[in-house]
Image: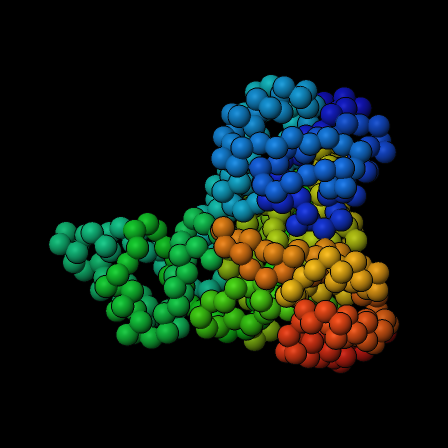
Length: 431
């Protein structure tokens, strides 16, 4: 099928469209400008003309099965499909949708079943990372069900875990092999914490790995068939102790000089990994930067909550790139990593009102404001993503400080962090 054969493009989305900032609306307008029809099939939130301009939309049940999604897509008459879904379970669902659609000759940009299965499994991911020469924290696969129920049959199993923990070194973390949003994470500071864990294990498979102290960062790759673009790194907060809710931290794609340079060989290895696995669309990685090295924690075979942050920094719209892959028009830009075009900043905001949103959009470059963030059914405070041109840091700080004085949406600590970041030596080095 050629690009000229694709007249109707279906998009699948599993979280609110508004979480993508302006980038899904920009995608919809771009598709409409080519004379094609676009429809977004979504399972969460709302959609209207402002969210998907120039296209149409259809809400699916939140628990829609792959067969139900295929049925609705075929009923509409789609010639091609793009997955914009996350978290991992939605990405795996869409991999099944892709396999089902292939029977009808309908192409879909989404990772296939094999890369989705392997990268969704944190232990399989560790093996893949090591095979590609990438650093990852040392760890062991723990069978929680055996640990919980097999004490009489395999009494030495707990002792194996004790010995491996000593070999790996404290502190440690456990993570559910399957799952996202911090599923199954327990912090194990020392031997006494390990004994408490062994005394009350959860069923299922877990990765027990060294907890590395450093800076948490995330990065996204988009592409297919050996042509991959690496978005700029986004740093998302400190790590090394009890897990915290990531969105409470200042998250940014900011110039880092030597740290960015140290990432370049990692980016090249990640491109080779994508080529080997046959990644089609997007992967997102969680990484810890510590002691001059990047330690990859996991690879998510789908878009992420940090997609908008990376796009705001680079100007390469991930969602539009995926459409170009579908149409056979994709060519990855040159260079190991996409250059940053501007500051990209995400930070928590409280007491979000319509008046604050209207004034913020008038005085600073707002990418996205989420009044209330909902994760796994739990409500948190709001989030704001802004961009700032290089050289305009002082003006941005003055404007955001004035906004806060009026609406009181930022904590004093967050204001101080913004100031420190935007006036740092690295900030001055980009001018």
